[in-house]
Amino acid sequence: MLLDIWYDRWLLDSPLIEVVPTNDPPHMLLVEFYGDGGWKVSQLKSWLPDPLVQQIQKVDLYPNQDHHMVWAVSPSGLFTTKSAWDLIRQKRIPSLLDDLLWSNVVPLKMSFLAWKVVRNLIPVETNLKKRGIPMASRCLCCLSHEETLGHLFVMGPVATEVWGIFQRRFGILEPQPFLVSGVFSLWFGSSPAIMRGHIRTIIPILIFWFIWKSRNRARFDGICLEACGVVSSIASFVEQLGLANKLSKRLFRGDYEDPWAQLGVCLARHIEVTVVSWKRPPQFYVKLNTDGSVTQNRAYRGGLLRDSDGRLLFAFHKEFGDIDVLGTESLALLHGLRLCTGLVTGSLLVEVESKSLVRLLQAGGVEVAVVQYIKEHKQSFCFIVGVPFACGKRSKLCGR
Ligand SMILES: [Zn+2]
Image (cartoon, rainbow, N blue to C red; front, side, top):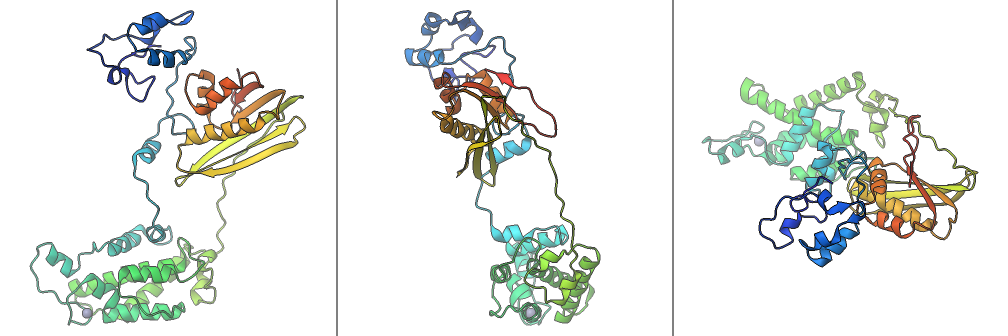
């Protein structure tokens, strides 16, 4: 009620001052246009064109109800920076390569180095020359080539020998790739059991790390860069991972015959349990439970209807595109209500998980499809909304 009719965004996506051609209108609050009998139509018409006035008349205000700010993209209705970031960031299809580079098995610095190798961000000598540092570049693996990223990490004699040893160890018989991206494709595609942290995702990361470390020792400490040194460093590191219980058995799926698989331990999976309960509706009532969820740009909705004996009357599930959480919850409810029409003749209890949606339904003034549907079918069933049990606590049911 204390919104400014011209300058606040309350009816359309933009303030009315940007929609209605008018010169510097005074600040006026909604409350000035709303009385005991509802909207003061003649007063609205003196400022606004008829189509807008008609649209305003469809908006119900509840002057005695507390006002809540609702952040529509989070299920709780509360603002979080995470949900704001999810809203504005550009979402792209996740890259399998980038996904598999990160795991909690190897230290972050190793994954980060591999990530930099993929993007040619390592300060090998040819990259330093490109950045304007004058030098005569000579690699440390054969002393007969410029130090390029590809030569040092993939094609040079040391790199070729190291990759060859590990390819043979894991039965990867394809020819050795010439590019960094080819190495990852080969290793990450070499087993159907590949998952984040799998030994075949760890090995390429370790090879890049220990080649780079050995190269730096050679460059700065004068210690010879040799394949055997790189291989033994990798072997002792994998053994240390095993001693530290960082390697679980499942990370060796498909490679149980490898001696390193003995290092895998059966780690107990951490499962978080949340107590959820469902209460039967009173006699002659039926209860509709709906829920929507959004994960990785995909939205899912589902629901079910049960009678007072707990018998299932129907259940549904649907997948659809990129929609925010509140939109998904509303569509789940709308779908459930549509299925109820004609089937439910008595009293219907509805439980949804989103408190924001319950608030929207109580306020009724928001033009979302489900509110419109409820308005149109108000006579069809007695309708009560609430949120379901969780952790033994119950939010109050709200009559309508
Ligand atoms: Zn070389």
